Length: 313
Image 1 (cartoon, one colour):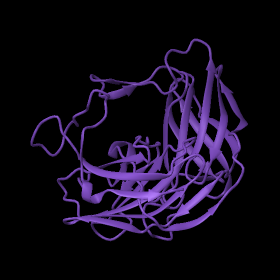
Image 2 (cartoon, helix red, strand yellow):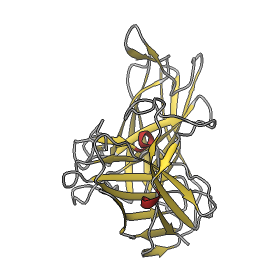
Image 3 (tube, rainbow, N blue to C red):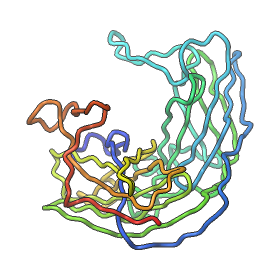
Image 4 (cartoon, one colour):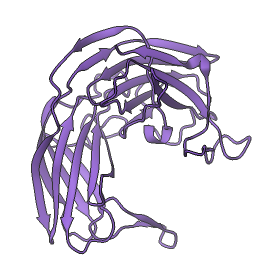
């Protein structure tokens, strides 16, 4: 796989997957609504509040709300300035986030390298004053015992810096795992095509999301591979932010992929993983812009020999 970064975001890899047949353990718990929490701070007439916090064992999700007068643009808005060669933000827009797990910075939790520590990302929320922060651990990015999972219960501290505000906001919220119904899968299913081998090692399915570990070997350095995921009705399953991949936590040439799928509220009986090669806009090249269809989806040449399907129900 073409190594642009030691750790690659699943959003960049644009995929999703699942396959297999072997079942692990399953148990059920009552599904509860996300809890409203009261982590709030105000500085220079701008308030930040963590309105909701959830953790299903796969993904920590924080819904953050901003409140203030005279703010221009959304909390996540920014634009690129060609002259300055830098990003430009309006007052009240987010510039940085640091999360702490029981007082330990996520930047060093489990290790200081990108492929050892939790991944933090954020996206716009339902209106310009809201954003969704996600945090995922590195436990699916290899087989090392040092790759730490997040605890079931912990104190989360968020330090958030906004443009034009002198000091970071410090927000504290308790996190308690609530997964609802849980199915743990250990398919250890492998498909091969030529030199390429893909193994679905394990998966964790909750009432809110699905997490998958794929182990990939034999991909040529000049080849880009992406993954799409489909349910038993042929509907595409969208990925959640937080996924990534690395070749730093295993033997040489072994790439570990950690995917998160949005399966909340969907009565999915099986998931099919479709590996493929993206079609580039310019014919004959191995890098550059991907070709997209009328719906803005990347055009893919699927590799049928590597497809997998796993039953969930």
